[in-house]
Image (tube, rainbow over all chains, first blue to last red; front, side, top):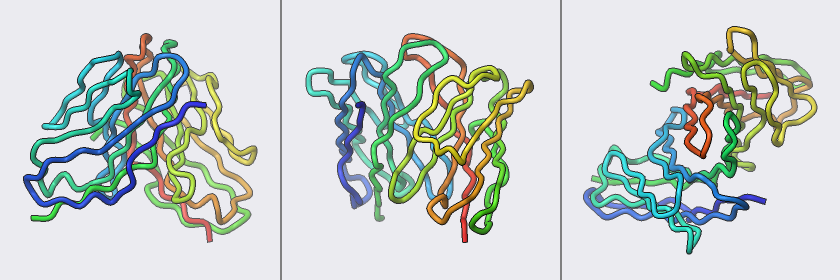
Length: 115
Length: 115
């Protein structure tokens, strides 16, 4: 079945450090890939997405590139801020049918950024 | 603010009881997805409705059911509640798009505590 594997957290960084959160996937077909972020006490927000190989999704300084050859979608940011502290979820959708795109999520990685 | 609303925000109830969670999708979104987030199972897809019809089922227990009404709001009904049903329940809505382009927008969630 389809699955997403994320690195265990928490990831603890100082402000302005470089961030990488690893994500690999297993899927039949040709999935779309997503990163969602969950701030404390809130719901999930879409951070970025990529729908085909070599696509780079980017938003708010975060980037991730869809690597089909390594089945990966690692999240990176060049300089993290305290406000980036949250839980980050990698997810995939393996359907390209219109009106049907259930998401399969990884376990989430908690990021803690200290001043 | 994603535009998806969920009520109530918190719900405390006892084992054996029945509760209803409500979700209003973003204006114009035809699809509603329900997810459960628990400590042991992570984020799991439960069920999807598309324009009033059930479209897909995931790991949804038989004690749980859902429906989508003509105004496109959706309700998730949980009955014969058990301690293990305590979780955060999210709904998400989307505009149906093909080719893996669909993006789901999540509500803030309903936190259910079964005592």
